[in-house]
Image (cartoon, rainbow, N blue to C red; front, side, top):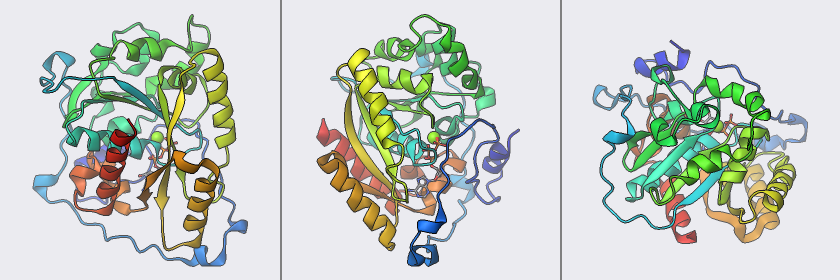
Length: 331
Ligand SMILES: Nc1ncnc2c1ncn2[C@@H]1O[C@H](COP(=O)(O)OP(=O)(O)OP(=O)(O)O)[C@@H](O)[C@H]1O
Ligand SMILES: [Mg+2]
């Protein structure tokens, strides 16, 4: 059992905000402190106190259901939008956004599928799915020709289905290299689900390898989370170049759906300055909704809950509900 799992089981333990036990190479950027303004370094964290969930709210490990057991969909599905949540920079809020935006849309009555394309499997565990219970994951879809419906875990939250990732996926980057149609495996799989979901989100790993290229080829649109920190835009040019290359050769209709400012702390000049810079650079592509930095958002995954369930009246839930409305409005 991993550290994460024991934390989730024993709710009396401080919620785990640490990474999975899985060791894979990450591309977290070193944030050089030397450029930081004095006041930002000294700004104390005044997050809400950690409140332990009571027994009734304690998250149980969810049973693994099969697609055949999916609850009936109660509305007519229109055009499916496939949206990759992408930034090769690590720790910018991709998985947090994937889980909470998907859940907020589910709460609004949308049918949503979240595809976890990161070997860390943060979106999988963050939705309360214990990875060692799984006998297949997105890896099998990409490399073993498994029908994607066989990998779907239905109704992990209201209106929300999940294609999970396990550590097996770590081998996919290398194994895909020698495969035919290696860049379009995900598109072929996810494309077969058009008409079954309102939204399909793909939670990307922090790299620009073949998994991410698969996401760029599969997606109609991109959401790029940007942390309101120093070097916020670092790497974004490289991401946009990758997007351009994929767009010109493999996916001509690929577009940016929105840039999302995350972990915003309005008390610091730094956060405000970075938000202003990003808005200057990307203009109206930036979502009006800004995701605030709040400890509740970092606690929720250790209970396997989206923020709308873990802390429905908090500012994190409010922000993701606003974002969901903006996503629907953007069409
Ligand atoms: N708005 C927020 N407020 C506070 N903590 C946050 C917020 N968003 C994300 N976090 C925390 O920051 C860390 C990184 O977030 P997350 O895992 O969503 O980033 P990521 O881009 O998916 O990372 P990776 O590149 O490793 O996949 C996590 O511990 C998460 O709980
Ligand atoms: Mg992630």
